[in-house]
Length: 448
Image (cartoon, rainbow, N blue to C red; front, side):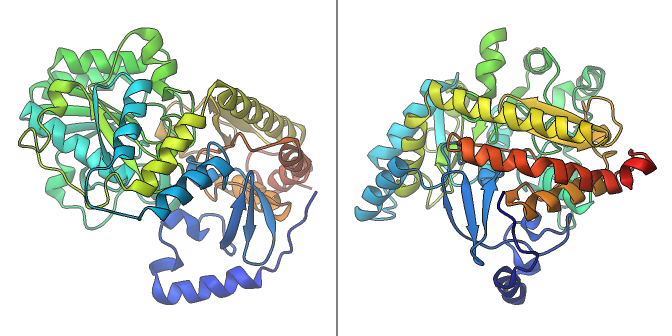
């Protein structure tokens, strides 16, 4: 097992410099290690299942850029595709053939008819909401507590993810008028959804949900829940927006819909995508039914645009990634995820640490504490964050990089080979013991 020195002077120096020029020293809040303490690692490179920081320390990566690196870092064929694209120029501001090919690949894997490429998941969900409002002529949006859909004003209420990590439920800068257009409901609560539509059904433009939430930890939809959401939206003339920025092309070839809607026989009206479809580059998309997408400019009056939408380098990376992501890749990723998740749970059980392991395909997370199965955000917020913090740092010291937040999913890739998996497994006993020492659910003997 590769131990990482406690002192990381290179990362500390870069963090100090970063805080002088960037708020909090980071460009996305969870990266700052605020929830776990210590010095955030500044990474210099990634290869396969491994990250290397500026101090030369190597880590098995269980973040995978928060999901996009399905094939691992610097996959040779993705790098080759990107290199060829860069040699032709980095941006044209014109249509390109690669963006058409990527759009066709997305349409071919999902139930949508047409897709529009954008540059971020936030942009995708923002545009989908605007389109839903334009199509229905209504204003209200229904979302679920704990589901994160990017930092769109109207969708930041009880949004899980970074907000949960930082211990806040909303953010200054969002006008009350924007928040008033959003109805926030408990996840997996059919009665609450029925009540909201009974009261506001003729004013609801859309209901948006993570197809399987991963931003309050992994909290899968209960059987038939997404089908229920699709049906109640259609009954009331609202659009059902399935956010697959995280799950799209990650949990299966066709994302969460491939294991859910394709089996149960329903389709969303709109879907959003990101992460895997960009192959590690800033790229995202939203799409849906032909009649809904026809309202989008330049065909229709709902305006949306972006200078770098369909960027030729990003689309080359995304296209190469999706074409390489065949059934053997998903089988490998699923197998590695199952091994690491089960062995993590076993180590914690052996150390006497109460916890709940939850998974959705190859996405998984562990809720520390004596909890029931986690079906909503309120339950996720009762977890033992101190236990996770101790576990996180023990794993980091052993050369395993976990998400620096108790509210995030863990990710693996097809590049996680036997050596990488073994390093994770070797780190687990000591990490579980560290968690037992501080866990609020452990006995005094277990903490000794």
